[in-house]
Amino acid sequence: MYKRILVPVEPSHSERHQNALKAAQALADPDAKIFALTVIEPVPGYFAMAESLPDIQLQASKKTLADLQALVGEGTQISAEVLHGHAAAEINSFAEREDVDCIVIASHKPGLSDYFLGSTAARVVRHAPCAVHVLR
Image (cartoon, one colour):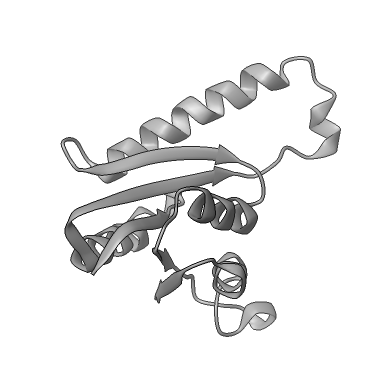
């Protein structure tokens, strides 16, 4: 059905994202490319002055990529990617840059401020350059 699928993942919520990865595999054509993407949010300004910040960011990227690869599993055809920035913007930029035709995103149970969808999922849905499947 889809040839290039993006699954945004937050490794700390692995159960919800395992379902999203399974849904992506079910929606994928046999020769499809699936991307699992984690976005590391920007460091607050008061930390940016620390001299060790580049080392901390590099360590965070390595650990996040290792966690994401563990979630995706060995020997799968799912590509693990880690980016830095604001989650929704990076997800949509990646989707456009990689010519993704579907995003499968898990949404948390909303609070009052984001009643129908989680805030990141809502922003992705509003601005995505392709189809979006939202899972709860």
